[in-house]
Length: 231
Image (cartoon, rainbow, N blue to C red; front, side, top):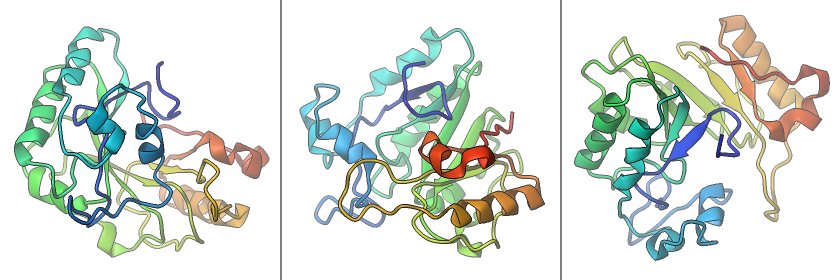
């Protein structure tokens, strides 16, 4: 295991390290204030100058070669350092990633976005059952966060960081939920209340949705800390 993300075994970043943030563009980036990927990218962790800037669209498709080299089945978070489904990402790039994943079916692939519109547009046909499609949610969930896809698609929600109390409606219709606190030393960092996480846990339990709490919540939750997988 070569990643510190505790709900997967590995990560690959075929688009390198960059993101304009929800609704952002090259001319007007809107990165999330709590973005861990931007913090890590600006340290130059992979030696790529474009990645270090974090606002230059480019690719590292050689990352996809790892999928065939890894013979042992792994759970892989695809594009952990950006948003593969951002509006500025060409469909052809996404299709190339999908093709590489389908060519290595021994693995389980997890995708995560804040732009679920692209899911609706791209996932109209059959997608393999080992591909999981999630969305990142930093506030209360509602019907607006739902999306219509082919019945074969497995879905999950990542409520990380949790920034405010959670409204219980909307947790149905998904296969997994992940929740975590903001990390790092950002001024103004939100420290979640235990009751916020308890409400999420209760909603998941009521609807039979497995819940995975990230390590950032272990101290807060104590004996109520759980890490459940849907597979």
